[in-house]
Amino acid sequence: MKSENTPFRGGPLDGRVLPILLGPTGHPPKWYEVPVPSPDGGPATVYAYQRVPAGHTERLGLQRGWAYEYAPGGRERRTPKWPWSKPSRDD
Image (cartoon, rainbow, N blue to C red; front, side, top):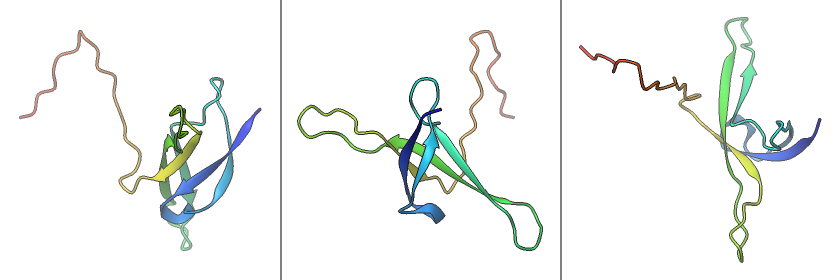
């Protein structure tokens, strides 16, 4: 499998560059989660990073690859919106 050295921005991995496995489309995953075990044996802390464009070329504006930015709020969970579903009721 192919991997790509991807920089991390913010959070506990700030400034590090790690090899990330690429998917079948040649892109790294949209979210990267790092579980850190608790020293007292409690539940692990999970740090979430979101994939963002690393930059663009000056002349043509082409993307230069990917980077991960720290998401302090955690990973965004999305549910599919089906056209036949009823709208949610907020009472």
